[in-house]
Image (tube, rainbow, N blue to C red):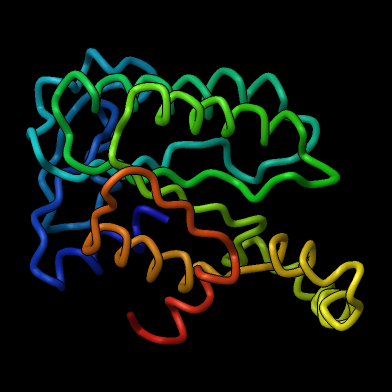
Length: 206
């Protein structure tokens, strides 16, 4: 997601600094500044954060699944909490966090890890935009397209309509657009962006 977001922000005139592990600098898109550090240790990069800037957190386990509970705790939750606390320490003006739609009937460990980070954002009083997609369609993530007819039917039934919309599918392009919008429209307090609004931002071009 970051590889899609960085070029889009640069094209819109934003200055972008991206965190990378030593040795991984070449994986970043051209045009951004490189900050070397460890996403699991906020102290490794906190001195590079600019007061008043926007920090976008996109660290997480690839291809989330029910069997990855330990990884969600060690990577998703750990990196999120470290970034949130570093943001507070550095005086970041706006924190953008990709959480997950909830409540939901599955992926409880993933939701717990992301919800813990949401709670910390609120506890520390950060200005933050929290995006809550359920499943993001993109390269290597296309099998859920087969579920679209079931979503269509669920949205037609009053008893399942709200859940179907809140737990709907979004595309990588829609998520990227929503992230750009979040960066360009900093929240005062905490703003939560659910699936219907993620889709709306992409359609409207904000």
